[in-house]
Image (cartoon, rainbow, N blue to C red):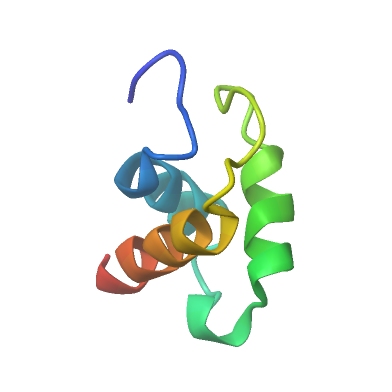
Length: 66
């Protein structure tokens, strides 16, 4: 995993969320829940961009594929 993540690093964020919440189905979470959990990742820098929904959906899709 990289030392610093951005909101565009969907695969890495999804992997970290999967490790932290292994029994959680990302399809059952709202965009806001996924974003809240992602913000708790220490390596994640900054805030989501103007494309918040697109970024969070990319995280959800990557998480679902794991």
